[in-house]
Image (cartoon, rainbow, N blue to C red; front, side, top):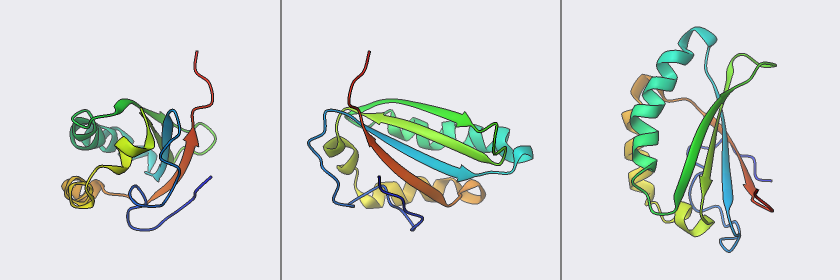
Length: 116
């Protein structure tokens, strides 16, 4: 498991790019009263961008009942190589487009062991 709170841990962290599938699990802190607007911005900006990327499979966004100020983005990739192929300048531009809705994130990475 890789946990980072750095500026953009979504690229170049040296994880195994040969896994059969990878899940990018991002956690953001978003005040409950801001979540609807934040989710709209995330969908409009990040999800729209991710849908254009080769190897992108799906994205779900979860709210946390135990921690109402947390939002989790669960992004599934065909493989880590596809995820890591996104140029850092493209990531930075999309992140910048979030404007005031940009939030620090915590990253966990999971390999898909089995899927049914």
